[in-house]
Image (cartoon, rainbow, N blue to C red; front, side, top):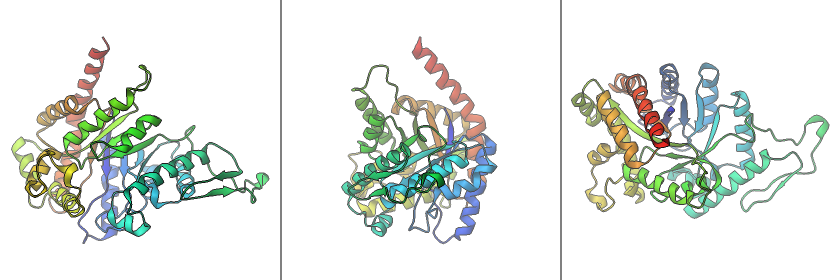
Length: 371
């Protein structure tokens, strides 16, 4: 049961980019000091509220300073030529001695879809699959390369000089390649089905209702039904928002505080979802009409809140309810105003007071199930 930090990241758009990048670096270093084992960073090209365009570039600066395993959360493959992703991911994996998990997705930001001409959701899905197939093909062979595709052609057949390495694409440190993970946000996710079919890992997004996460496990079980009985599911990560304080009352006050980072986080995300007609994944109840969904109800469902003992009980109940996830990711939030102290306390209490006991519970449950 690894503990990780997942950052889109998300900040108020008026904050200077240099300031938020420095803050996100500090947040990552704190996670490493507290014993978090993974760091996941998102990719967005066209939002000052989500300002990291290259997760690999951001994480490369952290690699020599931490022991963290790095996940791209995610590289939006339809927005890139797959040969560029293959080369950059291989270089990062080599630089870090194999500390990369390649998280991939079709993209989730409407302005990025428009920017790169990927507004058709069906086409985005097809391009994601085409891109990862091309990346894996590049890593699996030596030159010459001649990999056709509906969107991209990857070809080096004439300019190959083996004696000088010209025409040779880099391969990752990990063999045959880094673990691949797919993020999931819809209840009947195509990405989950694809991940199970191919032995990839699943990451359930934090900005979805608990019932959606439960749907991801049902989808995994259904997809695994056609596998051999001994076939285990690949690691499943569940990301959630947290607010932990000395008492339940104090944690709830922070969670709903007008200046609280959790409130801003879900105000931002629910506003974009409502504008795009995609509020369904944030609804605590699927039957609730869009106009009746309140920000408070979304926060209540999506944030695990309370004193350390309460949060432990909620995590145990969550795992029993939604399915046996293997790793837990905490959403990293903005540190404006009072949130720096509040979020640092949440990170510390989660790592030092909650996770040791949660790991004990998971280990004991696994031992009991194996009897």
